[in-house]
Image (cartoon, chains in turn orange, blue, red, green):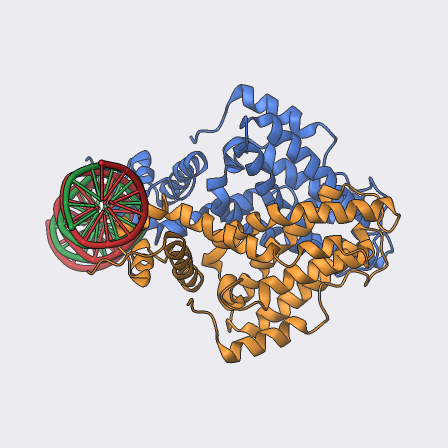
Length: 237
Length: 237
DNA sequence: TGAGTTATAGACCGTTGGTCGGTATGATAG
DNA sequence: CTATCATACCGACCAACGGTCTATAACTCA
């Protein structure tokens, strides 16, 4: 094979792109390293020049996801025009938006990310995202507790619970996808329901009237999903 | 190798025992099938006579866990001497007891089950347990909602959230174990804190005064864990 | 005793993640 | 315009893995 030398950072990003596409469509376990390097048109030696292992590749991917998700959220937690509830809602909505309706190159597609075989990948991403988001969440909740908007509660605890909600969705949707008609309809239904559930749970944990927390308008997920399904996006560069 | 024929059910249980020990100490991925069959003193052919795949073995293991955990819980949800809150507390406490301080042959050891590489195993177990426990939880919550003990809420939703709490503990403790001194102390601390957190969260979700839900007395986990660590149990038959 | 089924053995296979010795390329200095 | 050196890359190779297959020993029952 002809030897092509590229700028290291570019190569690295390229590798992440191809890995992302394969991991998302086939799952981390089923997508082999050979598939990844073949897809990227690179040799084994080159790959191991950039990553120490397949596992390290996954880690890097999760980090990239988290970084991308964090971008454009930071400003919300500083916005002086919002009260704590507004900030919390803003941050939750934005993080959900980042997960679902970003450009396909960033956070990935609902249809694949939730497949059972992607548990490990999903989990890693969530951990990485949690590390980035928690400090912001904690600050917002602290402010809310101080100014009396929220009922007293361990702020870090709330942050933990919020991030955990993200993980929870995986099982629900995975089960819906796996079971029966394997149709998006069930999965979407399950996800919508789960979101409403968590909204109310959060309301009550924070001592707010039911309906205060709004991660997204009802029907939002369905709208985005059916649109996305038609266009069928998702491959890397 | 000499050919030893055993009663199929016994063989099966034996296989599960050895698999359990290996999966718990090394994780599902790292423990190879060859390790399992070597440990059980059995041939490949024999193994595949009992299980369709390594994955199926994991599934069977999770089922067994769930069945064992469910035993001795059923009666709580029927106990006529308890009100809904009492039943809920009873069920939560019992399920936690099943996880932590059962005989080592049953639910497994804190020190290993929470290791990061055991995510998949833990997840499977939790799913299986969730399937068994949810109906009981749903009934209790329904009763509580009807007689006014609990604030109105989607009972299945609450059950989902409760079961999710189980999964949440994994990350927390895994992180604590992995980070820094890798000491039990941190993990125990984290777990105790997480339990308190969920108690209050549940209180508020169900509209109860803080402190109503009691999964276990404070310090309970630490007591059990330090005791268990000294005796160092855990190998199969 | 013999036929049929079930439980076991173990050689074998394709694939996988990972290693290693080598080589082409681009930058730097003389 | 070289000589040098680190870097980016190649691809053959490897041990180990999950899984398949054929053969056969042991049980069952007529």
